[in-house]
Length: 213
Image 1 (cartoon, rainbow, N blue to C red):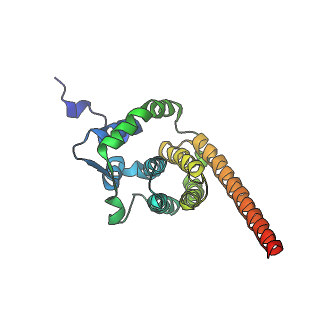
Image 2 (spheres, rainbow, N blue to C red):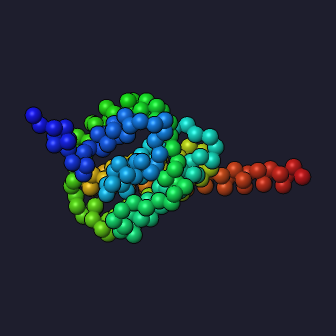
Image 3 (cartoon, rainbow, N blue to C red):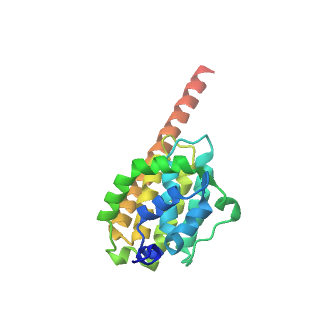
């Protein structure tokens, strides 16, 4: 009779969804960032960027998005500087989410996650090599900073783009990287439009105040 230990897939061969399901089934009331880092191992950069960006899309109190952007910035810089393994400061590794909330969200997201897994595969290696990782990492830094800014609806687009780029890094999928690059361009355009609107509004208020007084 074959034992479970012999039939279980090696850690590096488990899919993204299998690792997430294992995290949801583990004992304990909280899922910590450190636990996620350990679970994904050498695939941690893309997986963690994806997960933290996904968590950032949940409803959070004001200011929480800025805190969540910090580990993404650190991970993205490590990716850009070609580190082999994930390193995060101890205080970020202790950040946690209710395991029940994690499991509930995972149940809703598992179908699309598995669908994307079936579509995603290593391809277009020129978009997933060492030089490309530098560009992708710096792009993720920009997106994480934008996510933390007090811009109206300014966290959704960079959050989704970070998810796509994280998937591309984890799966070595150049198509996902390319889609993430297009999302980053859209983020730049959105920031420019918001800046232009705010500048025009301030100028209009100043003009009105000048005429009124």
